[in-house]
Length: 268
Ligand code: NAI
Image 1 (tube, rainbow, N blue to C red):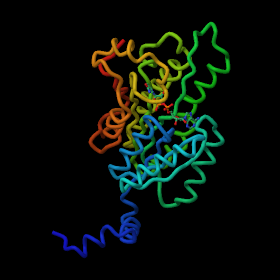
Image 2 (cartoon, helix red, strand yellow; image 1 turned 45 degrees about the vertical axis):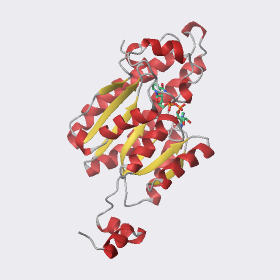
Image 3 (cartoon, rainbow, N blue to C red; image 1 turned 60 degrees about the vertical axis):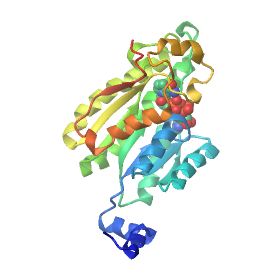
Image 4 (cartoon, rainbow, N blue to C red; image 1 turned 90 degrees about the vertical axis):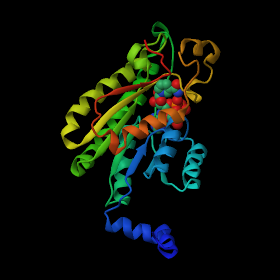
């Protein structure tokens, strides 16, 4: 049993900082893209609650990103914001390079590629730019960012990569040829990268949510859609976060190359 003085000392930031440096930082860094709202926010909050130092990436909405940061810090967690566009290769390189310069002794051991968009339209009516934009945001972003973090994960023989895909990428959805292609590509890339990195103790998995209650599904007819779902409801961002939290944990060390559905029983 620790006495009160020891307990106070252990909670003191200076003690944590010194201890952190002695142990070469026992808290690991997790980068969550698109963390200013929705599923990304829920993941960031849960990973921070479970002891990760969370780097919350966001693109534009400073106010919502600050809200994610406050949720984490009010909960006693540690987080920082990192604003950049994951769909821009140069922006990804600049952001990671800058972060690494500010944290020369650290590395990012967990990457959650969550940022994504949709722009639905029947393919015959879809603009080229809408197809390209969705591929750029949902699939190329995975390549731009992940490749930058792999070398450090390999060096440390430790890493977790989780890609947020979609049921659409497994079964296809009318009006989502662009989105389904991006998420289907992400699932295939997950399986390939998992095989490349397995020997280095880095796992790579995908999560395929069905309908999750976030801004992304706003405007959809929930009443009629939920009749198709065996659980008769949309999922919550926190439920997806729980799955991601498991996949990045030590307990999930033998799971790689998987795409795990989280959809209330809504299979193709
Ligand atoms: P959301 O629209 O609430 O959040 C997406 C986040 O990604 C936003 O914060 C947005 O700013 C960010 N983002 C988009 N493009 C970005 C970029 N270029 N750079 C940085 N950040 C960017 O949507 P939600 O529902 O939270 O989606 C999260 C992920 O889950 C997405 O990849 C989405 O495709 C996927 N998903 C969501 C489902 C749902 O029913 N909500 C179902 C299946 C998959």
